[in-house]
Image 1: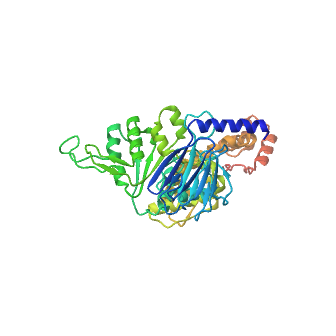
Image 2: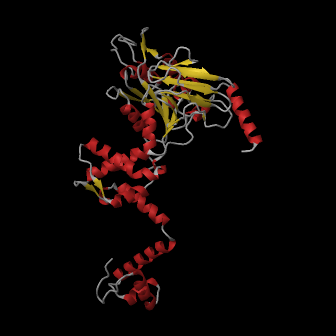
Image 3: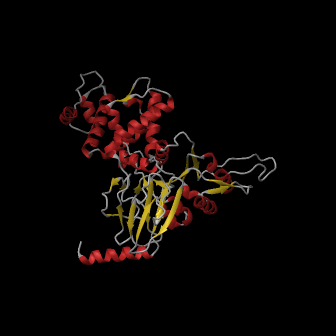
Length: 444
């Protein structure tokens, strides 16, 4: 990079720093937002003399130093449990440059440097540099996120596996035996979702109404997964943002404040930055759940690990049907790879469940796959087939039909087809159609 380009980049980052850059820090039971100014250094650690105090036993007394620069960098100060950037350990006392949205682990605490959501810098604000495409990498991210009650968002197409990832984070956490509660935010009216999320006291609304525990209370000690979070009404988004910020909430019809003791994961089909710009996600909620954003790629973009995902789906389908996990005929793998799965992992799971129900053996064959999948693939092959092959199939069908109608008489069949008999014979040989004997019908 030339000197002028480096200067322009540095100037741009300086503008971002002055424009409201923030460090979001999460640890077990705690969260803080630290405004960042250019040219400063902040020490993060458990010691009371640190600039940012993290009350977490996995964090050393003086764990790491954040240098705002620009460029922004993190320096491990010889901590006991190390400092990691996007899963990679950093050397002691050497600065490691950070991109915006990088996941920095200080022991089990997590630090994310974020730009303001309305920045015009062109950075992918707060999001990973690329979608996490490998199952092993997804599991590694899930493991790191499971260490604390950090709120985060997971985005991807319908059926891509957002709920699976949220469940994976929950299962890897120390509280895996605690509740995992999913709320479909698009499934309720505004008044009903208010009651579903926050709960209500006995007699609220009508004297006969019973007490209702909301999702925030039912998920106590565990995980709350908010699916399609951008579908929440604006008023509910603002109310939820305040509750997450204060780590407490009130049930409808009740003045008592109750603590929030669960991890909140927000799922949506669109990037939350896009929803924020479109006005469907409120800024307050965005800041609470978009500190870390995990992108789940579509199934069609996960070619190298497709076989592993099929096995995961097969194991899950067998468990749901209480059946032994079968093997797959190699030709089934080939057909599944050929299909595009527009509904992603959810559709793959449905296909495997259907095949399991159709099979009474310990191996699933091609015949066990749903007829709809065969029809789609057949149509795809027909459309992608070379023109000559398609024309040969049409000609073959016409010749066989003419021979059938003429009781195998080649002379009559040639006349029906408008061909010289010699040409018909040549076509029979070229297409591999056996010549019928006189008085015998051809076999298709």
